Figure 1 (cartoon, rainbow, N blue to C red):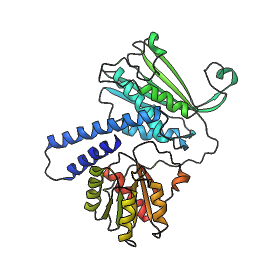
Figure 2: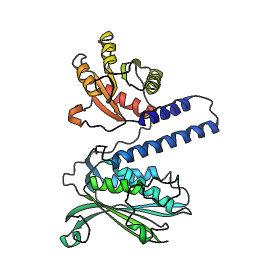
Figure 3: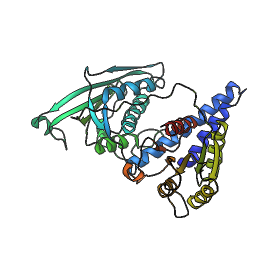
Figure 4: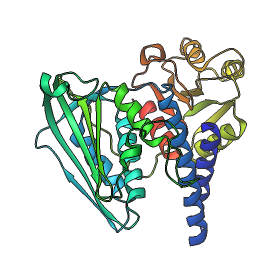
Length: 359
């Protein structure tokens, strides 16, 4: 599914690069991109819910996560909704997966917007909380200790008390057919649970809903800054890339994009094909870009190891749209060995290629 979405997203980006498109054509491409990204979000939701997406935990400042998200969400909420933040004065360090935290907030924002069709207020507040043993006993499955907390409140229609106890059930939804999957809050619950956090909700009909998310505070304080999106046009190069992708449409389209930006591209449909191509171009290949899950008996990480032993200083980018069972140690990820999740835009691919080659 992510391979199909990847082709759609890339094709839309390639078409938009063309000159002379009318406003209506650009608007249509934007709709294609928006719906493809919604499909990718749904795929990620299902992977997270099924615990088939491995979290990438690192020390993060919750204030920074919320600040970056508000910049993005602010363009989505519309004129009738006022989005406010109230952030703790000091850093709130927790060990978390930044993408999953983004997903939690985006799901809550989506629900809040649905609950406020006529507009309203959304408040995101961060704080540090110390739960005493007495307080912990009042919250199911909680332990006393230090937490960083995110309070998310809206002024929407609220949740009736008779269904409040069912809101985290998978596929339970009160929305009209076609307007909700019933996975939004189930995903929120699953992510918070995977982070060993706590989730609390209060709601009153016609007065709004407040979710409180408690994440264990980290004692290390060694945060890794979140990289902002590139503000510049993607940069190409003249290196040679061996592209290994079993999906023909995605392989051809990706190769055309790389060639458009100056790279020489060698194509392979599986691991055996890639090894044969490499023997005919030994000494010329600068970077291997390979799907992790390949037919033919040679997986992407095995192919990378075999070619690395033959090609000095080979740079590698792994790509996968499904459940990646391989941890960083098995993939040997480093400045010269990177990983990208499908579907990925041309900008992401081109930026990562340059980062990897220039390392």
